[in-house]
Image (cartoon, rainbow, N blue to C red; front, side, top):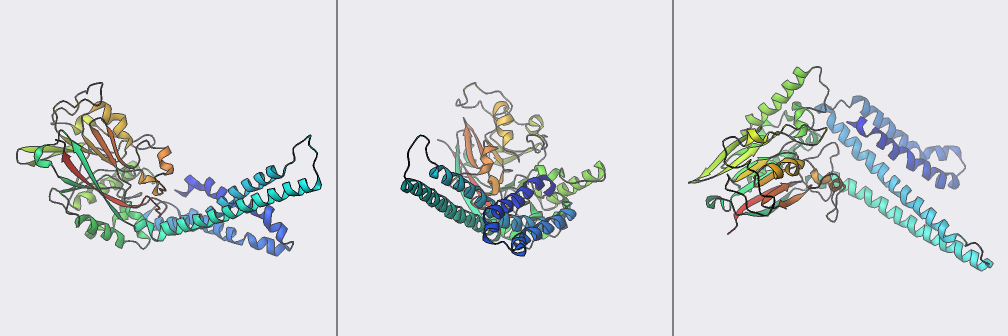
Amino acid sequence: MLQRVLFVLFILLIVPDIYIYYVYIRKWTSVWWKRALYFLPSLLLLTYLIVVLVHDDLRAPHQPMVGTLMIVFLTVTSPKMLFTIFDAIGVSCGRLKARLKPDHEYTEEDVERKEQQGKVLRRNIRLFAMAFALCSSFIILYGYFWGRNRYQVNQQEIYFESLPDSFDGYRILHFSDLHIGTFADGHQRDVSTIVDLINRQHCDMVVFTGDIVNYESAELQGFEQVLNKLHAPDGVYSVLGNHDYDMYLHFTSEAEKKRDMELIKFKERSYGWHLLLNENIVLRRGNDSIALLGSENDGMPPWPALGDIHKMAEGLTGLEQRKSEDSLVAPPPHTFSILLTHDPTYWRRDIIPETNIDLTLAGHTHAGQFKIFGWSPIQHKYREWSGVYTEGFQVLNVTDGVGNIMLPFRFGAWPELDIITLKKLK
C-alpha cells in the first residue's frame, strides 16, 4: 500500500527540509555539524519508512505498523510542508510589497518605508504559517488518539409516499466500512464498543454496507465472539465492499484468492449476518411487506462492478419499470424497496435511471476521514459523499463509516452509526 503513495511521502519529507535549510538554517549557523543535525529527524524518519516499506506486504500482522508509520510521518512532515508553502508565499509577498515602481523618484525614506512594509508583511505571514503548522499537528494527533473512536449516532427521518402503513416508524441502523484490521494496533476493544453501541439502539434491523476487512480474511481472527453478538429483531444484513474482494493483496494463484474471499463470506454468515449478493429478501408485517436488496460491489474503475439489478429484483413487482421523464412524478405501483450497496456512485449511474428503488444505503467514502465546516477533500471525487441525498422520490444515505483505512485517523468526519426512521408521507 505504501508504494502507492511513496512519491508523495518523499516530497513531504524532502522539499520542506531543503527550503527551511536554505532560507533559515544556513543563515543561523556556519558550523557544519549543527547544520547536519537539522537533518537528523528526517534521516531517522526515512530509515523508519524504509524498514516499514520492506515489510509492507498488506498482511494482517503488518497493518498496525503501516498505520503507526503514517501517523508519525504526517505529524512530522505536514507542519513543515505547510510552513514551507505559506512562508514561501510570505517571502514573495514581502518582495512585491517592497518593490519600487519604475519611472518614479524615491527618497531614502520612501525606500526604507517600502522595505519595512515588506518585512512586516513577511513576518505576519510567517507567524500565520507557524500557527497553521502547529494546528495541523494538533489535528493529526487528535484524530489519532481521540477522533478515531469518537463514535457518533446520527438520527434521520425519511418520508416516503409509497411506504406501507405497517412500516411507518420502522428503524434501520446503518453502518459501514469497519476495516477491522486497522483496530489491531491496540484498539481491539473498540470493536466491542461499536457492537454494544449498535445493540443499545434497539433498531428493527441492522445493515452493514461493506468493507469488513482491509485486505484479507485473517484480519477477522479473534473478533468472532464480538461480531456474532450483533443482533436485531428482523436480523442483521450485509453486502461486500471493494476491500472484501481481496483486490489489493498479491496471491500466489486465483484459487488462493478465491478461497480467501469465500472465507470472508463464510465468516460473515457465521456471525448470523445475512449476506446478500445480488439477492433480495422480503420483510413482512401483517399484510404489508417491503423488500431488502443487496448488491455486490459496483463502483467506478478500478473497483469491482458486479451489481446485477435483474437478479436483485427477481420476484419483486415493478422495480425495473421505467419512470416518467419527470423525476418528480410519483413512481408506478411497485414493491417498496431498500438497496444495500457499498459504492454510492452506483445510485446515480444505474439505480436512478433504471429502477424504482426507494431508498439506497451506501458507504465507501469515509467522508475522507476529514471534514471541517462541512467541507472534505473527498467531495471533489464523489458527487454524493456524506449524508442524505434526494432525486425525485428516490433517496440515498451515505454513511461516513466507523473504521479507517491505512491512516488510523478521523477529524470532523467522526466514525458514525446512522439510524434511519422510515416515515409515511400522508
